[in-house]
Amino acid sequence: MAKLDIENYTSDDLTSEKLSSLIETKKSFKIVAVKDIGFMVNKIEGAIEKRDLSCRVYSEFRSVAMGAVAIPTPVTVLGGLAAIVGTAAHNLATFNPDYEIGKNKIKNTVTVIYQKA
Image (cartoon, rainbow, N blue to C red; front, side, top):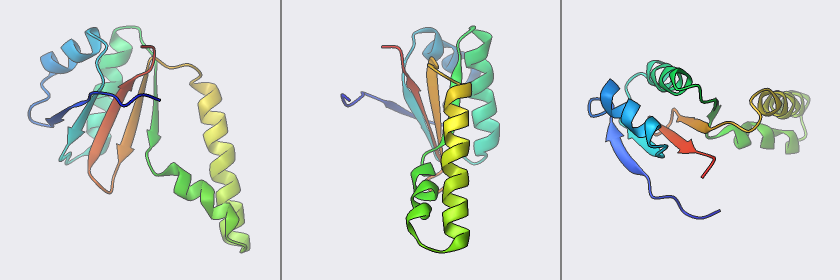
């Protein structure tokens, strides 16, 4: 996959007008220093769906949860398997989205990637 040229915005910089413009022009972007990730994801998701586009929301470190299956304890194996099944079901339910929205609660960022380019 080629490296994307992604512009960074803060929550304050990303006005509704700017967000609409980014989605209308099918840009990928990242929001940094996000105070309320849930609110920001809902705002982005709503703006994408308003344009009759689809999106998939995911946690950027979901692979860590799936990797737990390799640790041989009943709790980690079951938790890892549940993460794998849940991720597979989610990917099928949101097959071929226009945008992917990655939440990173550790870095307080939200990454929005246009997929159809």
